[in-house]
Length: 267
Image (cartoon, rainbow, N blue to C red; front, side):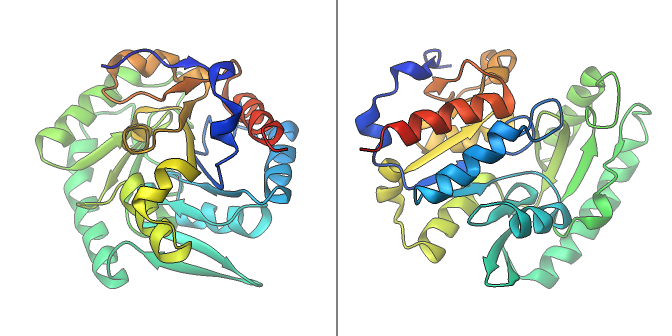
């Protein structure tokens, strides 16, 4: 593990002035206690007005992400841990899959068939209620609708999945099992180059990422300008790649804190 994240106030304004793209986790990064705070929604509008493209990168289902991209002031959503990118296009939404759509749907069915027998051994866990609205991945709930969170069972099942060689990662509420090669950074890199014309090299200076959980680690590893909201603190000891900075506020309050610092860095 590298050094602990630095306080957000140490982040230099001259660095933030280069930011043009803000990629962000959604659950417990934009939300707080399961809801989107008014201050966070206002921050999204303010960032859009300043010309900063905000793109959530979530393990949430494509059905939910479709709603997000239609109603929020954002430039798109990377959904299902990187399986599909939803891009607003005038009054429509375009879906861009990590691999061929038909092949990904077939592989998703194979994953479900493999995972369900394993899941039966953990009565506290279940498939997420939005599984039927997922197009590429499989998600298991341990802390969204399950109260109290089934943390020990989650860790045990996640270990089993990793032993099986599955591409499984934990968010703050789910275990997400993605197809081989799919992760948040892999799709983010593709979105930047193919849809925004930003090279991997240029992205190191103009992209900021903010998250809260272990499944954000690939993004922390790739983007020098990375921030964790305060509620990432319990996970820091388990991460190899940490965010460089950390907010004072948790969830959406921390995001709003970061947005204010980004916006005030502008002349």
